[in-house]
Image (cartoon, rainbow, N blue to C red; front, side):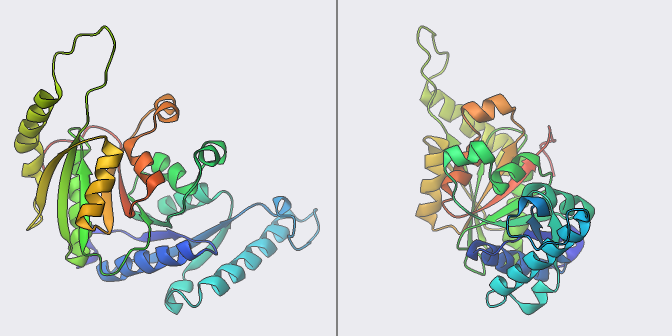
Length: 298
């Protein structure tokens, strides 16, 4: 595998076991496809850190530099026994919010993939303060790999597609990831139950929606698949539950999903399928941003 179809990898790290997992996966991908790999850690502004070393408040940048140096040492010490020594040579510490720093580094280094260690957050905590992964899902324009106990090499990948323009980019991204490891790929579409709206006659029933979805997939989506040996499926159920069940039944290590650009009102009220699966984190997730309509051909 060469770097012809890949760009540099950026891995967001801290002092947690989840960060070590992210480095292990991200570093393996970068080395396999022969592209640069950058580790980045974000630390708050010095005056927001109660235990920051004192360099004088009249010299804020010196104080920030001291905080960054201390943070770099702490991250190195924590990850030293869990990641390759070579990877730590590419560790950079910057001041700012984690999501902002990672997004800036992705753009600066023209990266094609960001990697994070998966952590669970309560619903209240996520909406009050946000999590780095959820924030990046809404703002990155490159794929985001959120790791969760990922065995290497990856052997089984499930990609969930809908009937929108996101299907093509999602399939292509799943195929590229599968090619890195020679993994088996299964692509599934979930047909959700129709919502019940009182006093509103329905033009279709669930069986009709299933039939029409099957026709659309056969005509427009499945022909996009090029990866040898890929299997496909159609499943009924609530999307998040059905995707989680599919992952469990196939013992998949990674699920690939497209992320749509929904408005804040929709996201706060109901969330997106991708963000709800991310909250459940049934396995590692490879999240593909879809910024707008794309053609249904390769």
